[in-house]
Image (cartoon, rainbow, N blue to C red; front, side, top):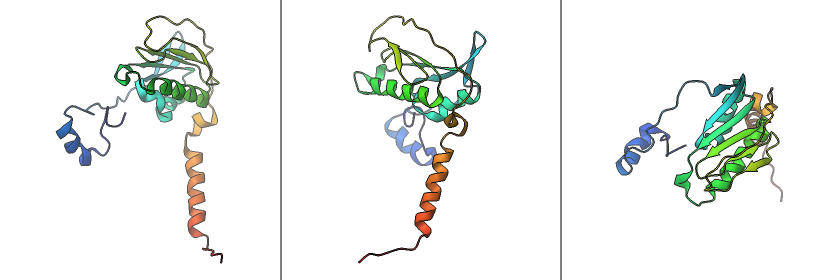
Length: 172
C-alpha cells in the first residue's frame, strides 16, 4: 500500500515523509511464491489491501491458483467506507480471474465470493464468528489473467499516437 507500507519514489520522498512520520513505509516485498498448497490445490493468497490490485492477484493465478484467499486487518479503517469498498474490490478480482475467493477479516467483511463476483455468504462488519460455505476451485485463466492490462495499454497507446499524428482540422 503506497505510503502505508512503502514510500513511492523513495530517493525523493523518504527524507520528507520520515521526518514527519518516522517508521512509515519501511516494509519491503517478499520474493517468494504467491500461492499456498492446500489439500492438493493452489491457493492464490493475498494479504490485506493487496487484493485491491490486479497485479498482485494475477501473480497467484499465473502460478496456478484455483481459488483466492485474503486475510486482512481492517481495524485501522474504523467505520469508514473502506470496509464495503474492499469487499467490492475483492468481488471484482474474483470476476476478473473467475476464481472463488475466501476472505477472512478481523473487522471488515468476512465473505465467500463466487467466480462471477457474487457474494455468496458474509458475516457482518465487526462480528466475531465463523463463516461456513463451499467453493468450487477453478482451473485455467481468463484473458485478463493471461494478459493483464497489456491490451488496454496497447490500444490506448495506439489511440494517443493516432491523435498525435493526425492533421489538425479547424472548423469555422
